[in-house]
Image 1 (tube, one colour):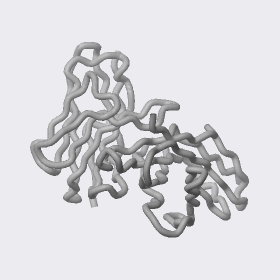
Image 2 (cartoon, chains in turn purple, yellow):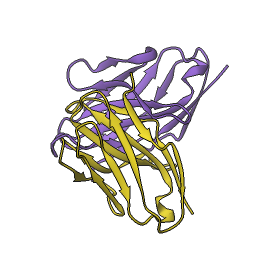
Image 3 (cartoon, chains in turn blue, orange):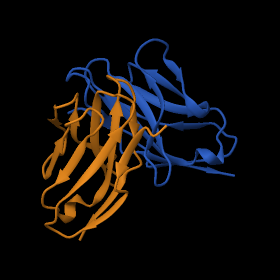
Image 4 (cartoon, chains in turn green, orange):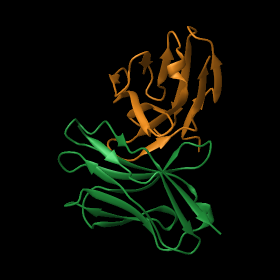
Amino acid sequence: AQSVAQPEDQVNVAEGNPLTVKCTYSVSGNPYLFWYVQYPNRGLQFLLKYITGDNLVKGSYGFEAEFNKSQTSFHLKKPSALVSDSALYFCAVRPLDTGGFKTIFGAGTRLFVKA
Amino acid sequence: NAGVTQTPKFRVLKTGQSMTLLCAQDMNHEYMYWYRQDPGMGLRLIHYSVGEGTTAKGEVPDGYNVSRLKKQNFLLGLESAAPSQTSVYFCASSLDKAEAFFGQGTRLTVV
């Protein structure tokens, strides 16, 4: 079965430190990969995506993500965390074998950045 | 820019009642989706549409129906609400297979 795993329910970092939010997936083929962020009582907002090309993709608010095909991972990173980065982060994968219409979301990782 | 607009934002239903959630997008997107979000489970796809007049089942379609009579609108219906349908519902739209744009959500409680 196709799936997306975010192994950490919660990640805690101090402001100014680098952060990593992990994501691995089990999907056939070469899917599109996404990261979204959700602030309280809001919908999801797109951060970045990987379709093809350079394994390191840059997105909004200073976030970047590293794609590793052999490990089927797509970890979200930021060199220096801000308190305002505290939110719920979702990794999402869009398999292309079913037409590319469906997106599989991970369960989410809550990021706490402490001042 | 309105983007994706959902109405209502909150609703409390009694078991067995029916209701329709409305979603409107002004980005001329072909693809539209309805998800539900439950704690610890991420987002699960209920139904989706790849164009006006088309709908398809997602991961958890039971108990829900949808219609896409106009390109900009995607309606989600609950014919007979059950407590298991208590959730936060999100509508989204996308251009082809690109990233999705989400509405602010509808918090539904079924008592």
